[in-house]
Length: 78
Image (cartoon, rainbow, N blue to C red; front, side):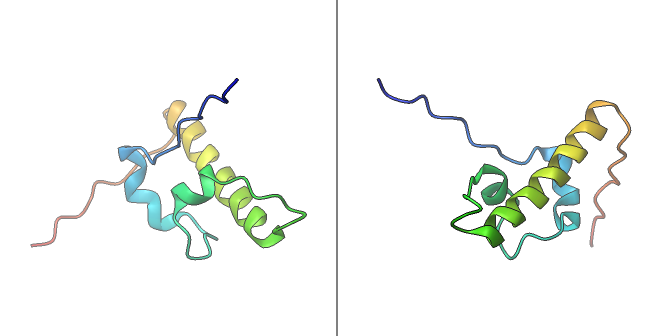
């Protein structure tokens, strides 16, 4: 029996203005870290980065669902 593929997480549009505020990515994309599942025994640094980013994203999702997050409008250059 084949395993069902889990749909990969993508950053929602409302979170995009906050992308640069998500810390400790180590040069990886937020999506790569949220979708990753590194084994801490094999790759502790990557596993730690994933845990840090996943917790930040979870906090933003929770605040947004409770309507406690205000995302500033994007500045228009020009």
